[in-house]
Image (cartoon, rainbow, N blue to C red; front, side, top):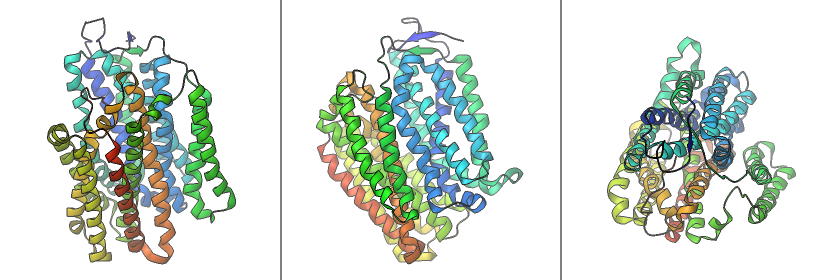
Length: 480
């Protein structure tokens, strides 16, 4: 099948409902599940991977940071490129590449190969994921589009709940002696299913008159990101030599050059007008600090449960179930009840609950120490998850409330990229603090200090929310 559609809110055929639209939705949801699970599943697997492949502590950070960094850098670029070359084409390329990269991850014989293939996974995920939403907007009629996008909430919630359990089950099951490798091999049949669905049922979607891709801008933002993240992950292990400091400082210069380029480019990667909007800039601050704190905490928590408390991968996965269930509770509660009535206050309530609940995590660790059990952690981790879910539901729509409709698509893409970027920095920064403290303070002390850092970041995120618009967008912009 090779139908070409114009990118618009109308379905195929200028009013004719696209026959295979629900199968296309299922195909896109499969891709979303692969991305959501793979972004976090290595949290549980990292100790098992290191036990077999060896490698440094920073290698464990790179297994996570490499994926999210590549995904963040690629999101805006490939979202724009889809307008130019066709979204079905890029979805297929991304699905094939992601599946192959997953197989290479599973076959990796060294940390370097695994990190490289994780980076490839993230980049190819960024090729695939942004195309889905534009395709759905083009094939669903207006009265069904809300129902289609509503499917993403339960899928994201289920993926959050199932991810840690799935990782633990697969590693403990040790099918065919593959151990942790099965968490990557399982993507192969799923990826093949997504590919078949795309080739057979997905239409081609292009945007008439789409702007050219600013290659120089893409290269500058990619270089600046690498110059920032690489020394943050490697600096501690190398003893912070001068060149790591120079790279960190130089990244600010390259980011400034990127901003200069964007202001003068005819086809900017990011619309410069967005950064003249105070509410939107504040939203970037909120989303970056929030995911910096959350992703950094999740890495440290999983390392502590396995390496500090000596939980098996399955037990460590089960320790994360209350957090995931909390997200599944908090997100619909906020979306259906709190956000429509309270607007920005619902978001602030979620961040405040997370901050207090993280204090509960610290208190639990302080009280029980190395004797901490899964059950001891349930109240605090459940409350943390509920707070996170309450934030996830209205976050994008409140930030985008001050952005006009014409710029909303670009603004949403940048926010999604900053979500990933903040998570990458969180893994780098909080992970580095954790490993820096290990020799002197052991796992418990390092974890408690890392939790305090995360709490401080949540406080900053909460403070910045007061600069956001008070109410969400009336016509919410759906996002991944």
